[in-house]
Amino acid sequence: MSASASGNVLFSLQNKTILVTGGTGGIGQAISLRLARAGASVLANYLRDERAAEQLKATATEEGLGIKLCRADLTNERGLEQLGSSVQELGAGLSGFVHCAATGIHRPIEELTERHFDWTLNLNVRAFFKLTKFLLPRFSEGSSIVAISSWGAVRAIPYYSLVGSSKGALEALARHLAVELAPRGIRVNILTAGAVLTDIWKAMPDSEARIAETVRRTPAGRLVTAEQVAYGVQFLCSDAAAGIIGQTLVIDNGIGVVA
Image (tube, rainbow, N blue to C red):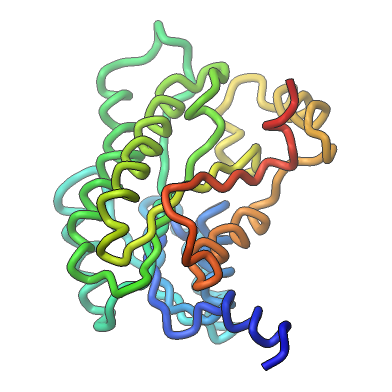
C-alpha cells in the first residue's frame, strides 16, 4: 500500500457512526458534512433552526450522505431521552460523539441572571456529561469523544463570562474523562476554535468592531472557517489520532500565540 493510500485509510471514517450535537448550523453543520463525506454515518442533533436542518438534509440527499436528524432539547431530561432513543435506533455501536451544541447570553454581569447561568451550563456542560454517561455502553473500541471549546475557556472576552466559564468547565470535565475512559478504549479530546463567522456573532455587542480587531491581530489575517474546524474534528475522530488522548487541538490561525 502506498503512503498516500495508507493516509487515506487512516483519515477515513468509513463504517463509523458519530453523534454531533448542535450538528445542523454553523460549525456543527460543517462538522456533520465533513464526517459524512469522510464515510461516517452521522446523527445530527438540533433544536430551533429548522431552516438550517432542512438545508443540511437537502445537501445530504443531494450528495448521498448518511446523515440523520434528531430534534431534541438537550437542556432537559425529555430531550436527552429523545436523543438517546435516536442513537439506539441507529443499531450499530457508536464510534464518536462530538459535542458542538452551545448557547449563551452575551451581556455585562449586571444583566445576567441565574436563569441565564442555568440555561448556559445545562447545554454546554451538563448535556455533555449526561450524554457521555448514557452513551458509554454503546461506544465501540477506539471511539472518540470531541468537546468543542473556545478561547473563552482560558481568556477573558467581553460579554462572554457565562459562555467562557461553561467552556472552562467543559474542558476540565473532558480532561478528567480522558483519563478515566482511556482504559476502555475511548479517547476524549478538546478542539478549541478561534473566531468563526457564524450567526452567533449577531448576538454579540460591537460585533463588527470585534471581528475587525480579531482579523487585525491574527497572524494569518483572516478568521477561522467552519470547514477548518470540521477537518480538525475529522482528524480527532479518525484512526490517525489513535494516540491522542486528553489533548487540546487549537485551530485559530495563530492568534493564540500573539502577546
